[in-house]
View 1 (cartoon, helix red, strand yellow):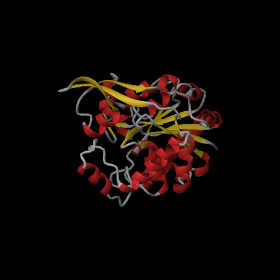
View 2 (tube, one colour):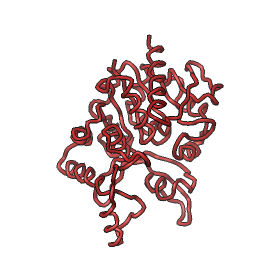
View 3 (cartoon, one colour):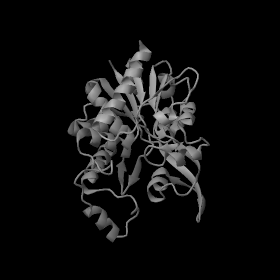
View 4 (cartoon, helix red, strand yellow):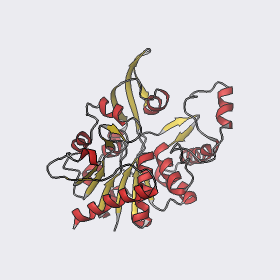
Amino acid sequence: MHIVTLAGGIGGARFLRGLRTTAPADQITVIGNTGDDITLFGLRVCPDLDTVMYTLGGGIDEQQGWGRADETHVVKDELAAYGVEPQWFGLGDRDFATHIVRSQMLEAGYPLSQITEALCARWQPGVRLLPMTDDRCETHVVIDDERGRRAVHFQEWWVRLRASVPAESIALVGVESAKPAPGVLEAIADADVVILPPSNPVVSIGTILQVPGIRDALLPKTVVGVSPIIGGAPVRGMADACLTAIGVETSAQAVLSLYGSDLLDGWLVAPEDAGVALDGVRVEARPLLMSDPAATAALARAALDLAQELTS
């Protein structure tokens, strides 16, 4: 059985770790969000790809859910001493190595998909990890603050501002001319089931779905999603701020409607959201909190079981 998942950062990576315990890892292909990617200090940083790679490869900082374990920040402190900006994005010394390798390979002409494969050769995440596209697409956010109405990179809004300034709009710059990375459409075509983890529905899953060709390729497939919203609040992070920016209510029902019955066949919600419904989509209530490895594995198993049931 071939399983395809679309994944963003922390929530997606942790779900994948649970999924890997319920299905052979070599049967799982992960299509990762690259809309969060940013160039810092002359280096190309791919936060979501790296979070999946580190989490599944055993190198993640478990407490914060991103970055490397046992990290130090000597280079960051030295850059700050020189007054180099931005100082709000804290890359660690171990993490710098990944971005240096990636940037050198990009400069040498390698596409991001080949670079990701090379980086994964060290980390051995087990799954096949593909970027959504080799083309440069970056999520930007329009805000209106003391400096006036302006567009900022998603990372500045998310990390520096902590989404405290309301977003007037969110746009994936460059997506119109982007193409799915090599292997993406083929993996979807070969998939028996597709699972959408509880990643941000706007700037993680939603971003991947914007790449021309990906959503259309998913439509004939059996797709099961896991709600990132429990009882009207995000499971983690600030997905509510993103949903507000696109005029969508923060609820399991609203996210289900956002994805749509043309895409989803099944939808897992928390017990407190058991009344959620949409014609053509089978909704089941399950505990969604990934509080420990056992709970995470149980959630992944429930999503996979539902997908297999809907396929048969």
